[in-house]
Length: 146
Image (cartoon, rainbow, N blue to C red; front, side, top):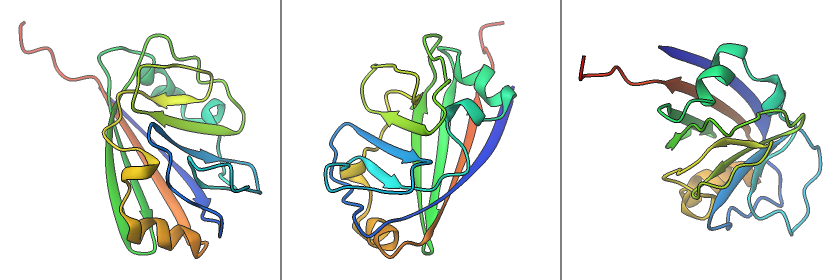
């Protein structure tokens, strides 16, 4: 079973991309220098707005989430996991985490990328306020044991 959704946002001149454990996309329009995990603002969706089929799959511990981030001709792929502990009810934020920590903003845990590990060319495109397209695809792998 698979589900998909697309979120559109844009970069900001203050994008730093230096946070070591998370990255975030937000509906907020502004960004301060303390927001070192935020890679894009002005998103058209928060966690609560994601497609209902995608939300259902993300709330399964078996789910693998593949996120494709595209800005300024640069594409980065991020692999994460879902969790039965997800609530996905934050109205503004989407957060991917390296850890297992879960909040209402969390859409992926055990991510293989964080803001600090995103390619610098990609971060530079976001600093130029390029559009960010976030493609989320969740899949529960087929059970091979049956």
